[in-house]
Amino acid sequence: MSHKKHPTPPEILACDVVAKSKLFTVEALSLSFSNGEQREYERVRGGGRGAVMIVPITADNELLLVREYCAGTHDYQLGFPKGLIDPGETPVEAGNRELKEEVGFGANAFSELKVVSLAPSYFNAKMHILVASELYPEQLEGDEPEPLVVVKWPLDKLYDLLQQEDFTEARSVAALLLLKAHLNLEA
Image (tube, rainbow, N blue to C red; front, side, top):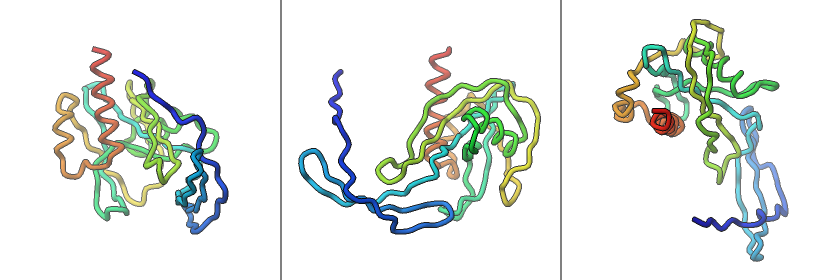
């Protein structure tokens, strides 16, 4: 199968900051495409550190999830532990730290499922999705404003997780489906 790729991205004619907060910078881009077409785009520029999402699997073949408050939807969502990669950390180091902060376990083994983009038309953030196994108890203090609810989910009922009304976060859904493909390849 052949995939035609565009040889070069459009030329950025101008880039102006139109809004800024503690977390985000919104830029207006003036672009010129290879065919001469010019357009205005807006994008959210992240910090560039990246993030991790961890799919922890216990020795009892259970997934560990967290239920936490999400300001964007103003409700509680069920999903996999996640967080930003701190300066100087590898994705695996960040994943192990986040596991300890959010679910009270570290892991001796990690596998990377995929690096995903979040709304790449508007946002330059990347997330490393990792599977963690060989878990051991260890707790680190995290930065959450309230204790997270840890939920154990049987691995053999992962499709039932997709039916949960509070399991809607697209990155967690993608991680679950990537895990299913990963486990089928290993079987």
